[in-house]
Length: 128
Image 1 (cartoon, one colour):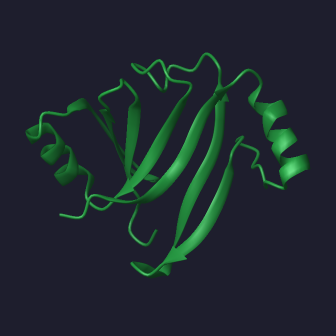
Image 2 (image 1 turned 90 degrees about the vertical axis):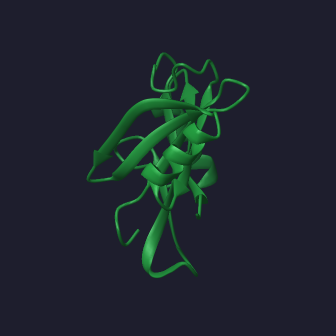
Image 3 (image 1 turned 135 degrees about the vertical axis):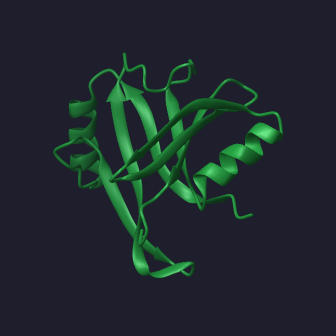
């Protein structure tokens, strides 16, 4: 089974996400969207007709989106088949969160690594 296929995003806490996004736009040229993050588009050999994306997104310092992790960041990894991977991770004894989200942006699930970091697993919609 194919597991991780790439990095879907880098998410991190910020004292002032808007100001930080403005700094990255001004000094590093990131095209920060009105929602606060930047989108990097790319194609791959596995998906030559589609466009993949990797997100760069600052979150408010008090977000609970990364919970139960105490880390100031979370990595989003692209996966080929979320439900199959979550089942395999459970079978392997990993700490998989019960919650799974299915939206227009794809399917999302989470696992906690051995150091307590929450890792977001994302199966993009078809064609991405």
